[in-house]
Amino acid sequence: MRERHGLFRTALAVGLSACLAAGATAQTTPATQLAIIQAEERGATAPRDLQILRSGTRSGSIQTVRMAVRALGRVERPALIPDILPSLRHSLPEVRAEAANATAQAAQGFRSAKSVPPAITIPGTQTALITRLNVEADANVRAALCEALARLPYKNAADVERAETTIVSLGSVPATTTPDRLGVAKSLEALFRMHRSVRPAGPAAIELLKSFVRQAGTRSGPELLRDARVRRLALEGLTSASALDEEMVSVSAMDPDAQVRRLAMRAAAISGAGMSNVLTGLLDPAALVRLEALRALRSRGAEQMCDAALKASSDADMEVALVAIDLLDACGHSPAAVAALDRAVSDHSELQAARGWHRNAHALVALAVAAPSRAASALPPYVHSPVWQVRSYAARAATTLNDRAALQTLANDPDERVSGVAVAGLGEPPRPRAARHEPELPEPAAADLRLLASPRATIAIRDVGRFEIALLTAEAPATVMRFVQLAESGYYNGLTFDRIAPNAIVQGGRRSVDDARFPHAEVGTWPHVRGVVGLAMPDTNDAQFFVNLVDNPRFDHQYTVFAQILNGADVVEQLLEGDMIESITIVP
Image 1: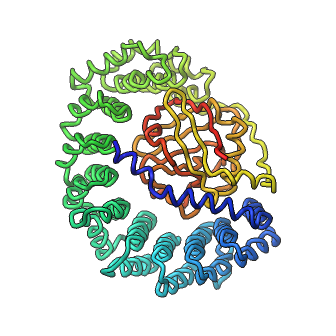
Image 2: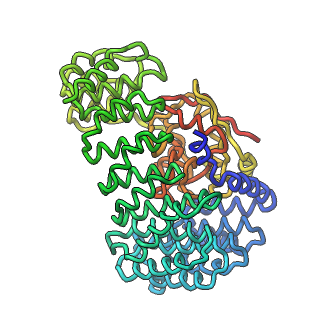
Image 3: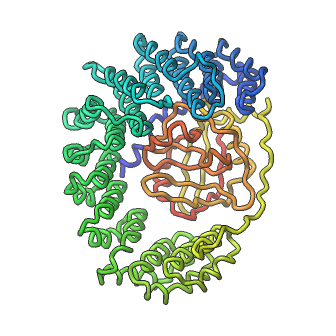
C-alpha cells in the first residue's frame, strides 16, 4: 500500500513551489500577466492581443515571459512560430523549455490552418528544434526539445525518420542523465503513438527502449526508483511500436515499480507473450497490477479466467472486485460463477446504501449475460431503486435481456443519465435534453488575481475522507482562477464522481442541468502522471475534473492540468461511482 501511495507524490514539491512562485510573481507584474491571460482566452485574434503576447516575451519577469511564450503556442497558429523560436535562445532554461513546448503546440495548427506563410513549414520547424538541441547544455531543455520534435504533425516518413534518428542519438550517449533518458523515452512514446501510421518504428529506437526496460535488472537504490517513469514510458512506446516480446513482459513483471508491473500485464494481454507472468500478477500486492492481470486473462481468452475472476470477486480492493464481477459475464458455463452472481444480485441488504450497491449492480449486468433467465426474474427491484446509478445499471441489464417493458419504464426516468441508457437500449434516437443554462464566462479581471494566491484546496468526500491538492497557478492560471471561484461559491458541493475508470481516472463535478464554463484549454508541460488533476471536457469547457489513477501519457497536451494531489491519495483510491463531494475548501 505504501508503494501505491508514494507514486502519487511525484513532483509535488516542484508543483507547490511553482504555485508559490507564481503567486509571488503575480504581485510584481499583475497588469501584464492579467493582460496575457485575457489575450490568450480571446484566442489572440486581435493585433492588440498579439502585441501583448509579443511584448510579454521581452519582460524582465521570468514568469511573465513563460506565460507569454506559452500563450503564443496555445493559440495553435503556425504563423506565430517565428515569434516563439527566439525564446529557444533565452538565457534561462525554464524559458527555453517553455519555448520548445510552445513551438510544438503552435505547430498543431498545421492540421487545420487554412493558410500558413510559405516560409513556415513542418520541416523548417523541425530543423530549428534540432539546431537548438545540438547546442543545448541543459538536460531538461533537451528533453523538452526532443518531445517537441516528436509532437510535430508530420505527414511523411522522411520527417518522422529524421526526428526518430535525432532522438535516438541523444539516448545512445553513454553518460545520459535521468532527464535525458526521460525525455528520450517520452519522446519516442509520443512519436510512435502519434505517427505509427506514417512510418513504423525503426530497430535502433526499439532496441533503445528495450535497454531502458532492462535497466530494472542492472540498477538498484535511488537510481532505480528515479528511472521508474523512464521504464513506464519505454514500455508504452514498445506497445505503440508493436515491439513487445516475452523478454520485455518478463523483465517488466519483476520490476519494483507497480506501474511498470501493471504495464507488463497489459503488454502480455496485447502481445500474447509472457502470459505465465499474468498468473503471478494475480497475486501482486498492488491492486492496480491484480486488476490488469484479470483483464489480461479475459483479453487472451485464458482458461483460468473464470476461476481467477471468481476468486478476485471478493478481493479486498473494491475496484478489483468489481472488475472481477464484470468478467464473470463470460462464465455462464461455470455453475460456481453463476451461483456467485445470483447470490450477489439477490442480496438487497445494501442495495440502497450510497456505498453499498456496487456489487449488486455490477453482478446484475454480468448475470444478464451469463444466465439471462435468472437476471430477468431479479430485475424489478433494480428498475425501481431510489438510487439513479442502480437504475442505470438496470437499464444496461434490460438492454441485454431485451426487456422492452423495463426499458420503456426507464426511458421515462427523471434522470437523463438513466433515460439515455434506456432509450439507446430501445434503439430509439436520443431524446431532446433539457436546455442547459451556460452563462458566458466572464473575462478575468484584476480582482481575480487574488485567486492565484491560494496554492491549495481540500476536497472532502462524504463517508470517505479528504484529499488535498496543490493548485498549479503557474501552469494554468485562468483555470485555477475559475476553479477557485466555483469552489468558493459552493458549486461543487453535493456533486458526485460519476465515472470511475479503473487503472485510468476518476471523474466528477458534473451537473445534469446547468454547467459552469471554464476557460479554453491551458495545455502545458506538466505531464498527466498519477495524481494529477485535469479538466475533463476540453471541447465543452464544463466544470468536470478528473484525477489520474495511473500515468496517462496519451492525455499530455490534450487536457488541462491544474492541480496535483498533495496528500490523501488513499482517499482517491477508495472512490466509488456516486461518491459525493461535500465541499471544496480553498486554503489561503
